Amino acid sequence: KTSPAEVCYYRRADGPWKPRKELDRLSIGERLFATRLPERDLLDGKRGPKAFFECGVGKINSKGKWSIVNGMVRIGSRKMKPSVVRKKLQKMPPTDIIEVYVSKISLAEGRFEVSLSKEDALERASLAEKIVPASSLKVGEILTGIVKQVKPYGVFVNVNNANRNGLIHISKVAKRYDSYVAKEDGLKSLGLRSGSPVDVIVLSNDKKRLELDLAPIVEESPADDVEDEVESHTVDSTGAISDALEDEDAAWAAYGAGEGSGSDNASEDEAAMWAAYAAPDSSTNDDEAAMWAAYAAPDSPIDDDEDDYDEDEDIEDALGIGSY
Image 1 (tube, rainbow, N blue to C red):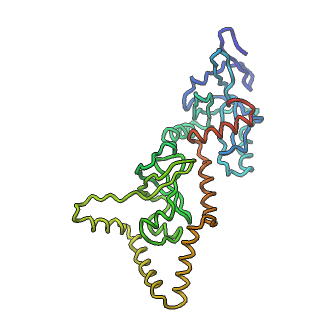
Image 2: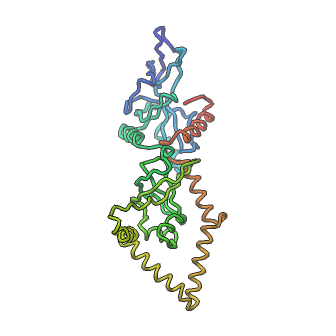
Image 3: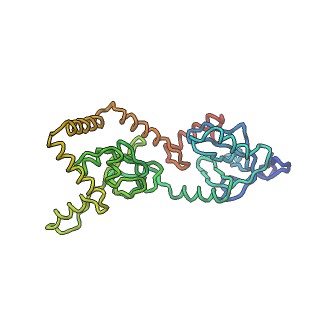
């Protein structure tokens, strides 16, 4: 319904007619009264289930015509159990007027998101301001990151609060310390534990794969102290690396001694491990490929432009509209 003054009205679920608010006049944290539209629920979204609400919001096109813009609520992650999703939706019956709060506004795409509490809306908005698109990280940049996951083939590191983690492959770690690294235990013994800070350099950033390496060691001492400085960097001050290298020296001595079947088996095991890392069709590489695939489609509500395209297409196909 549109008045002569070109104000668009809608009938709220509790009866009265109300004027629609223009999308570009919304503000983060603003309270709206909404009704859920169950026919537009998108429960199999690529980044988790979503529900849509009539919030009394619209936009005006270049010809002065109004169109409805529904608010979107993110129910949870894509791994959320269907039973949990159903319980959450039951708390938002389509017959009720529900208070929602604006958490994200995308004027260029003509859409917005809402949360069920003001605190959550403000937190999401704050997170959106801090998130950095992984695609903006440049090859050759040296940055400080935080280890997020330790895997048999390396560690995933979050850099600059980017929306996608990068991988330091175990072979890069082995090359740095010039030693064999025994999967997760070996990585952890070198200080690469979940939550640990680490200086990294961006090796490549292409096709949603962010590849990292340990940052080069910077020598700050005079030239005549370079040798000592290198040694001090090689042996970490935590002591964990020192212990690991001492253990490895002992292991190498055992391998070199060649006495007894135990040392032979150990050497064979190590050779097999390195062969597994090098083999392109190994199960470890299969796991790594799966991890890359998972990180190419993150659960995070904040994504870079490439990811947004897939999400938009998914939603638009489901709703049969050009935008949501």
